Each structure stands twice: as C-alpha cells, then as structure tokens.
Amino acid sequence: MRTWFVTGGTPGGFGQAYADAALETGDRVVLTARRPEELREWARPYGDRVLVLPLDVTDAAQVCAAVAEAEQRMGGIDVLVNNAGRGWYGSIEGMAEDAVRRTSDLNFFALLSVTRAVLPGMRERRRGWIVNMSSVAGVRIAAMAEDPPPRRLVLGSDAYDAVTSTLREALTDITWSEAASCAADFPPGT
Image (tube, rainbow, N blue to C red; front, side, top):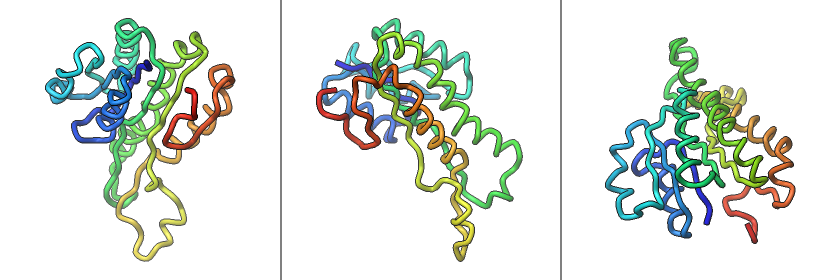
C-alpha cells in the first residue's frame, strides 16, 4: 500500500481525481487544499486511509508542517503529486507585476518547496515517485507568432518541466531499482 501526498485538492479537480484513483487501488492519500473544509464530506467514507490537510503551497512553513504531519500519521510518503497551479488568462504584457510574481511563486517555487520537503523521506527509504502536473499551454515564443496570439498563458509551466527533467537525472539514489517513466501508469512491479 502506497501513501500519496497530493497538492491542489480542489473538489472536482485533478488533485481529487488522483486521490480517487489512488484510493480505488487500495492506497492511502494525504490530500491538501487551501480550503480543506470543502473536502471533509468526500473524505469521510475512507476513514483513516485519507488525511485532508490545509496547505497554501506558497508558504514554506506550511509545506514543511503538512509533510511532517503526513509522514508522522501515514508512515512516509511514497508518491508526491505536485498538482497545485494556476493559469493566466490574458496577455502577458497586461499582467500586473505582483500577479506575475504570485503566479511564478505558485507554479514554480511552490513545486520546489513541496519537493524539497518530501525528498528527505524518499531518500531515506530509497524509493518514491514524484508526479509534476504541468500544462501544454506553457509560455512558448512560437505561440506568440500565432494569428491571433493565444489568450491563455501558463507562467511557470516550462519551469515545471525543467525541474522534472533535472529531478529525473538527479534522483538515481531513489530510482535506481525502478524503471523510469514519463507515462501515466506505474511501470509493472512497482
């Protein structure tokens, strides 16, 4: 039985879908959300297989506290799903500076913060999976050449992809015994 730590647990969103899929296979889930009260009724039927925690992923202290509580109550984190994120609808030049920074904090720096908090336990156990949700709508120069240019941009998406690629190369101490995968399914035997 694996324990999943999923960020961005908005009801009806991808985070909750990951949680549902993990629970269907018999695994345990720590589902985090900025408004955890919205998930209490969903979690109730699963009993101690689900832990819902409040988490603003842009707050490093909250991230560390949530990971510590998850590890203490569930015995470790086997699968991290970095799902929290947000898109920007509109032109890049029309986005206020503080909105650019908040979006980058959420879509990039929060990913690093959560990953950094979870990695020590994975390294200690010499196993683990990290799933970074990204977007095909990431900012791309080629997209700006479209006529008309796209109205939806996701700041930080390419940064997600860069971190994911770097982690894949750097975490051989965790993945040495597992087949690497960029697919939607765990390789056989994991």
